[in-house]
Image 1 (tube, helix red, strand yellow):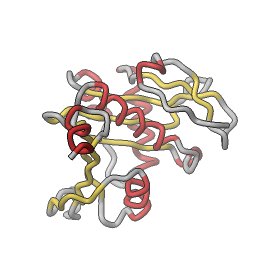
Image 2 (cartoon, one colour):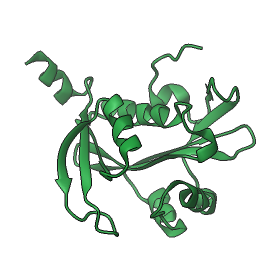
Image 3 (tube, helix red, strand yellow):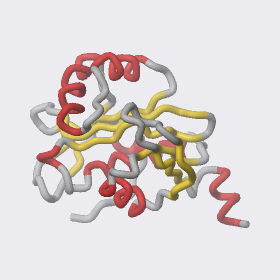
Image 4 (cartoon, one colour):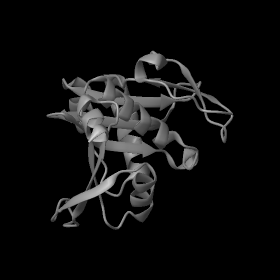
Length: 181
């Protein structure tokens, strides 16, 4: 199967995505309040320091967010993305794939949606934080061409620092000017 480049508007929030390793049809859609409990349960499977359901509720209700779920044909969430605008950058707050569905390109598809949304909205780029101890996430973001741009000391609750990673989007006005220079 070949992936074609598309924008978030092309997906219309319910368009099927094919995941070659799974063979199932997945849909992408924004989360709803009724998803908060399921997302909190998924967090426990995905992270050592999970968000509580009230964090998901506040993000779902907040303005200026770009949040998406990948759901299987039965309506079960298999991957999710939560982002907030910070000036001209889309801040990736959370991206996760449930363990049985990892290594199938789902997180990369969600990150592509975020990048396309950023460009479409005229944003400069994306920013995120990652633990230095999360070597698989660091490799994943490096593969997606994110650059290490700084460190925030003691960012996480357990005192671990955060590596700040950024990516400029090429088809934003700012990114286009950078490419011409």
